[in-house]
Image (cartoon, rainbow, N blue to C red; front, side, top):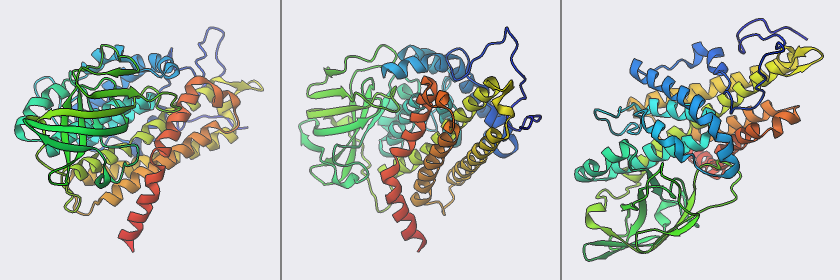
Length: 437
């Protein structure tokens, strides 16, 4: 064995004294220190964030460690969303994302939003998903596709998180193939009526605004419709199955999920649901020119590339603390070369993931014309796969690590960010292959 004498993998720790607290893999009492970032500081410095954004990012980290971590495990077990945390989360003033800012809400850079997502996913990827669906898919849809009047009406309330948004694109039979959607919008006096079904829609059980993507029956184009539900996050999640106050709208939570269990995915049933003309977004999806919906998808996929970075850092931090505190033969497991080698492999992978996501974010925000959708989707597919590798290395050789509830939660979120992108990864491979050949 060797003795860990540097801070390269976190502070050295001797055997704990009789009064020391052994946290092990439990994150309820105290979340482990951000050891991965400390070890890789010269490589993963928050380049591109201004001083205020960096302070906001660290404030989110403190909130996640102090507020989210103690509640995450219980909500994971129950597959419920932590509505009780929403008031303190709103107080962070980050609900505007990269879309909107005013006197009470900061407008952040796209990279800052992505890194905030990574901070949240380090503790719980389910909560990070809620935030990124709201500030990303939902608010970006309004930003890119709505009229000035619609933006003025919806964005301030969404930025304050009084109104949580969700993104109704995926259907039981179609997801990435948006041009084949079965949901239809049929013109009627004063607006349209939506008929169809949406599936796997995150935030749907408490979202006050559903951005429904449907085929405009008169033009055949894919268009977004702003469907207000009257629901609000932070005041309870409602029953599993219910008919909403909107005639014809029914929302059913999808039960028995194994991963991202706090994320409230749902089926949305639309039976001639009325949407007034004022809530029909004017910019239809144009996939040839990359306008409207394609812009929303590109921005969101870039953010998703950061989620496995945060998850992997959380996995590393928990593994390192476990190795420091767990003893065999009278010494911490972290002092053994076989475990140090695994830590080095994890750190190297995390550094590579961070570098790719960061470089792509910088180029995208700078408006680099060379960045294409294929690059963004390739990065998303690769970081999710590398996140699963970090999880695999972390769980090697320890039943305690594999089966402790917090670790199971981290394991599932690392796998889920990969598996939910797995099918699209094959499509991505074809896209990148075509673009590069």
